[in-house]
Amino acid sequence: MTTPVHEGLAKARHSAVHLEMRDAYQPSDPEFIAWQQGKRLDPVDRSSWWRPFLDVVAETTARGVVMRRARIVSEPVTDYIRYEHDVTFPNVAAGELVRWLPRRKAADIALPGTDLWMFDGSSVLFTYFSGIGEVVDREWRTEPAVLELVSSAFEAVWDRATPHEEYKPV
Image 1 (cartoon, one colour):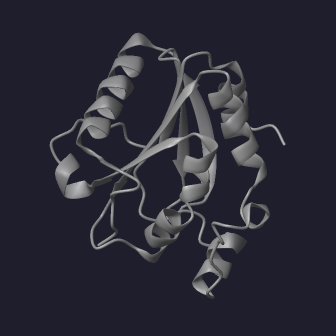
Image 2 (image 1 turned 180 degrees about the vertical axis):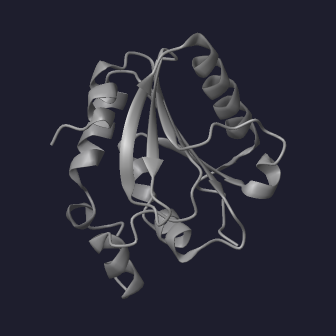
């Protein structure tokens, strides 16, 4: 399945950054529901957690593209963020770098109004969500002012954030 994110990753040559700022996404996600019911990924059984997106991550990072994901989260964290934290180790295993930043530590950073991907510092894919976290639209932007805002915001978040391996959800 080709999505705008997959297209951006396929074209990326140097970098792909992903900024996530919501405390919940897609509450009807079957994997989230299964996690709420006690399903956990087995780190030893790769076949139980490897998914198609991780193939994309592995292929992208194997080409030398540095993939970084930063998540700004409220503390105490929501169940959805606990779920995300619990299922992030496969992304790291596939080559993605992930960091977490408590929202309190991001209060003085000028941030874009929604989650995004930025590819090679030259294009941004904004994702717009409904109030409950369902994707309602996406938009590509390339204006220099938008690129500068996104780049400076992401770097400020990244510099303050805690690597996945060290972050413990509160």
